[in-house]
Image 1 (cartoon, rainbow, N blue to C red):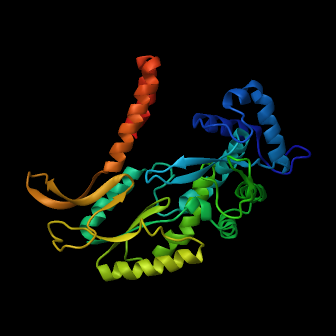
Image 2: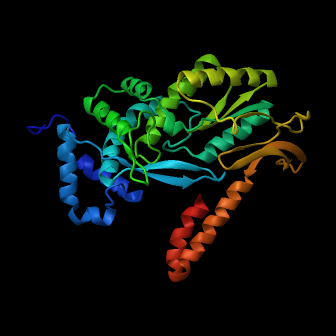
Image 3: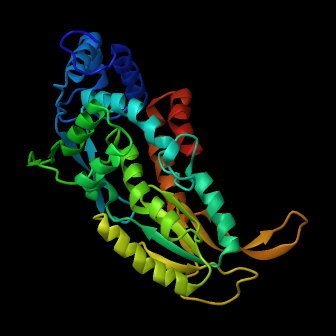
Length: 345
């Protein structure tokens, strides 16, 4: 360790963090600095960041509050960090994530390496065939309502590294500057848009929900992708009782279910022929409901299966239309470069 530097953070780590941040692109933060601006003096910028982080003196700037429209017409807040802040968060994430990733549960899918929404949908499909009832739930404003004290308590279960703890707490408490210039002190939440936020949100839900389900409801399988989840039950009464216990558990963790996106659903199929009020649900862009299904030997029967939801199809078409409009002035190769990620999902 160099003299005057309290923490073992290498310049190589900072350089690698920048490469990963740049690969994800992203808009400028509150300082207005773009990647093009940043790279005009890249070596010096990264050196200054390393020097401050390794000495413990790095203080992240406020994040830029940006309103993002949601599919339901409402809006959510995205917190956009500066490029320097993103690189600093990536340095911490590169060191902290390997400590928590191995302990995360098998049925947690969001923001994790080698796992996808399609994996979660596939497992959900299989379990809906085995258990006729589903408790579909959504955590209301997960990223905005994470309790900082509980979050840091969870972080400390997995690291005693002083600079991990120092910078994670500083990232959590960084102010947000709203579009009108108002500076908002954040007493809860982790900015949706922060590099380390997905890891922290998963860790928070690991203790708030995942481990609780394993301990208290080991007979009820589930799938969770960030703030969206599905729990499988044998009876409606089980699902109703579990919903009340879930509300209480989340309340202990300063969270709540979204009332409009949480309900109990009957998985109607060839073998589950009753009729109930709710017989369909959406999960990760797919609508699950009773459909005509063909088996491997050609037999036709009714099965509770997923298909791309109408909302997802509409969003896909809108993105493709926007791409074509913006591509009128570009080459076919440039248009393909913009459209391929949309097609791949």
